[in-house]
Length: 481
Ligand code: C5P
Image 1: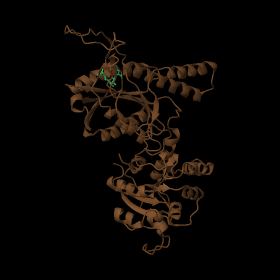
Image 2: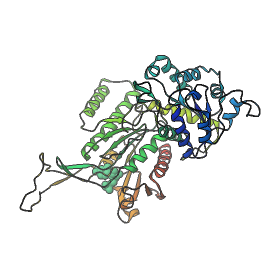
Image 3: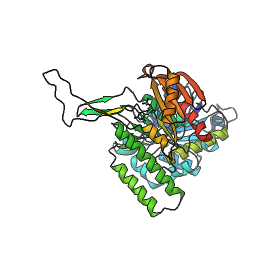
Image 4: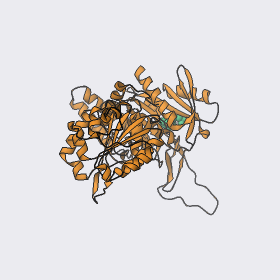
């Protein structure tokens, strides 16, 4: 989306992963970018220049003294028309040179002389990556505003297993795409619920709501790409965790309720702790919140793939374009992107926004059976009794420390009237409505935003595009708060 029309200098350095850069060139182009390949001499031992030339349709540069550039200044000219320089794979040696400003070939010189953002995708043996010298160099690059995507961990070409493996081409292209998203939510913490809940009847049966979780996951991804720290509390869905998002899996509405309240309590306690001196009382409250969290029965926390979505996040787990050529903005983008990585999963403040996208079951079974219910020959059916689940959104909106609350409403008729009434009933400033049966399981949706002043339609578009628009809307509303 954001790569459309972008000009990327793809720097390829010497490493086995250089072959993956060929796939990367194709991915970037597929997303609408123009790719100019520049290779180090070592890289050409792994992949030939002809491969990149054929894939990109542009001549490949390897030599500082290339006479094809009119003024003989390839190191300057190649980046003057670029939106970003992306080094993939970046060897340990190349990272060391970058960190220290060495320039003894075309690619290092070009990086030093560039006036556009730089992103680096490390690829090396796990011991080389873990070596304090490499870690020091990477930290220096981060400090210099360079974005680092990855590395991943897994099987390595040398036969060892560990951290240092280059991200896959699709992940790098996604990270590069995310890089160009304006970081309108940088420094914000967003809590999102998504998917259905499942209320057991017995150990093998239960009741649930229709929800694919796609809209909530798309919103989590969009907020993360806009720079927010995102925690996603997900009901039972089999969707991959968006890159850089912290995910907590739950099954029932009660677990979802508890996970949401615990996240809010912890974030508030941490924010208070950072605001002022720690008293014995706040320390005790924090410890209680943390202990409660461990016992909450909510599923395990996990984070989206290491290093992707801007590749700036730490951790591992399951799986609106800037459109601006202004180098100052590009610099800000890079800084925000780097900052974004540093703050992921390390809360510095309370939660800024709660987006309740989950289709929470209204009732749970009060007389749930510990054993599987048996079918009887007399044709009878079990007498199930129900009890209402807590309304998570309404409860969050009532808290004295309530974040900016966004509710969702799936209606089957009279969308505007029903949704307007629901917004007031729930006590939330913004409600996002859609016709439920027209969106379930689909990639597209159409939304109606309702606040105290009226309503605004977001016309039919992909859930990703709508999620990006919602993230922008949220950023504006948080700024105006
Ligand atoms: O009342 P209804 O289920 O239609 O309201 C929908 C909104 O309320 C959604 O944002 C949903 O996530 C939230 N909700 C909730 N807890 C419930 C029921 C709904 O947070 N028990």
